[in-house]
Length: 101
Image (tube, rainbow, N blue to C red; front, side, top):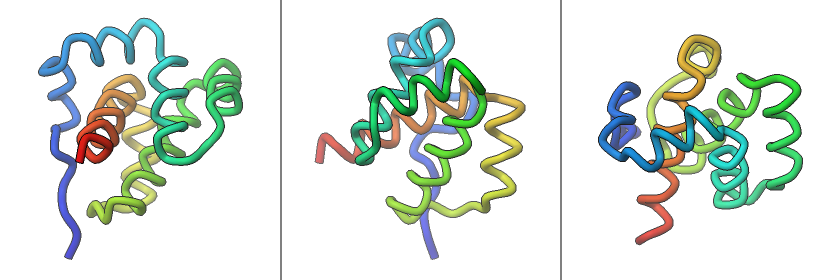
């Protein structure tokens, strides 16, 4: 049995800096999260500009698998499409907490 995300999807306001960055400069959040999970900053940033929800889905799925978090790819797609910025903020917080260990 896996675990849950440390921050709820709409708990992004608990970290104002991360929340603002995810909403107003999502390329930065995407790039930093990508680097922290072993992906390319520039590739994910470019993808964010072309198709804004794609990196949210990709990174959420990757983080879920990497940190053994419960969920399905279908949930990742729905969250990425419907709540892109909240998904980016949630994924970023999860990676940041893991990196501080």
